[in-house]
Length: 469
Ligand SMILES: [Zn+2]
Image 1 (tube, rainbow, N blue to C red):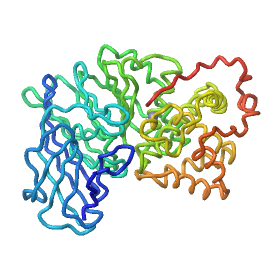
Image 2 (image 1 turned 180 degrees about the vertical axis):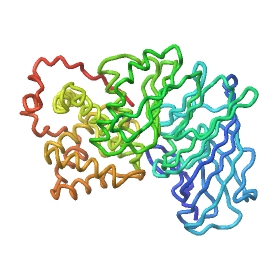
Image 3 (image 1 turned 90 degrees about the vertical axis):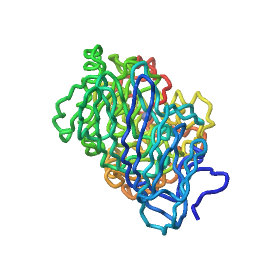
Image 4 (image 1 turned 135 degrees about the horizontal axis):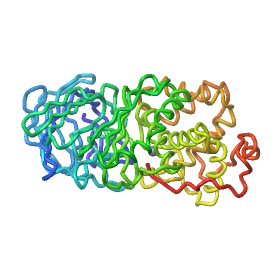
């Protein structure tokens, strides 16, 4: 049995019709040829897969691109068929659970974003280049994949395009070969990565490499940007090395060998994270807290979201709540208001909003609702006040270390919190995660004074507008 149901719900109700639970992909090797002017993509994808159950067919996700050839272990597949968003492959012989196979798929067309319950995502043309922003369902816009966050794989991505452009993808640049008018850029991502975090950025960019931060573990930081934005980009990301230092101290070692930031010439609605890099629109190049909190937010996703990735989208607070709390921690680290001050303000804001959202299962339409971010961060703050700073940061570091590069669930975090503290914390987590009404914020009475923040009444801290990152 393939595990496929006739109505093909896919693997995750938040992204219906995507993903196949009957197989895992171990590695993707993508060779892409792309022409920016015509948005023409021609690719060969080599996927190493393993069957999780006995099967004779499996399903991949591929949107708006046509497959012209498909082999399994070097021989033509028994049969393959494409229907919107899906590529069904029948193997010549049944596979046992645990058996591996290699599928090679030649495909092409004009890539475009994939529509979904939360808007469009995926490969998108810029004024002069490409951005790939796939969270949560856009990966099939550019390569055949098993599009569920719980299937993490290694990647090798090779992109050939006009030499006028620079190409950035996940992982380390292992080669750039220039021919007459084109250059082939090859990147390798050896730490497991979820499909939605795979990305390609193409633009007329230059690159500046920042010195590793003193205690950041020697992590190389690359800044990739249009040359006319050199000064603004340098100023906006000037403190990123310090952030990396602070987060390394608070959360544990940075999980990947490098961190890159790509600045697009185009304005973007929101900055966004991919594995090992983040993408900011030119409109985010500005000094001040409103930008710095986003720089911190995206960087922190490398720990919370990219190394540790939710197994199911309903647990999205494990990404966004933690990244939002990282903003508040950076605020304090950089001499701004303490996390407790941000918590008190955001608690007051949420208390005035409709309390109809369940943090443990917000639903696909609300998964990037600002309340998921803020209540997620407040859950962590409530936990911190309850168990104390020493246990709280020990828990964060243990969370990051024990589940590095793996898929995680809310239950994993709750269980670990109880294990690390030896305390029963179910009641606290139930109130914050599984009940719609906003619980009281523990320690709220003393926050103003104890964190050195001047009285909270009449605060001048800029209010934080809703954002989806
Ligand atoms: Zn985020």
